[in-house]
Structures are given as structure tokens and as C-alpha cells.
Length: 128
Image (tube, rainbow, N blue to C red):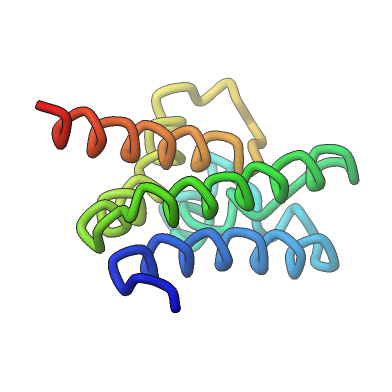
């Protein structure tokens, strides 16, 4: 069976993929990151990751989520790594508030990069 240590990580990867697939059928304008609407529509901090602009964009990020799930399973990333990555989801988009000229943003790419960074830091800390 799957080591319990990787369960939380793989669940987050699955949530990223499922949310992205669901969002594909919903209006992007209701979910994407829009700094002008962030204060009264805080859900955008999370849902922006699920918005994709093309089938290629969606497919590439679903593949990325699958690779990250496999990597987390092999590395047996602990629950605390998954919690750190979960915290990075809204922070990834909150950081975009510093760039108000960016009127719309969507996609898992930033969140996936945050996951790679969390995994790398965990593995480096273990190596030390």
C-alpha cells in the first residue's frame, strides 16, 4: 500500500488536477486572479490555480501534477511538506497583488513550482 507519509501530498496533487478539470467547464472570469476583485472575492487566491487558458495549458499542468505526485510518493514526503505546499497555494497568488498591472492570471504553474520548491527543500534538509 501507499506509505501514509505521502498520502497528504498525493491528495493535494489530485485536488490540483480535479479542480483544474472542474474549472475547465466553469467561467474563467469567476475564478481567475484579478487584483481589483481580490478583497471582496478571496476565493480567487485558491481558484486561480485551476483556471487554464487552453487545452495545451491544462494538459501540461495536469501532467506536471502527476509527475509531482509520483515524485512525492517516491520521496515519501511527510505531511508537513504537504501542509507547507498547501500554504503556498494562496500565497503564490497573493504575491501577484504586488503586480496590479497583471489584470488576469490563471494556471497551476506557480503552484506546481511551489511544490517542487517545497519538495527540494525537504530533501536537502534530509541530506544535511
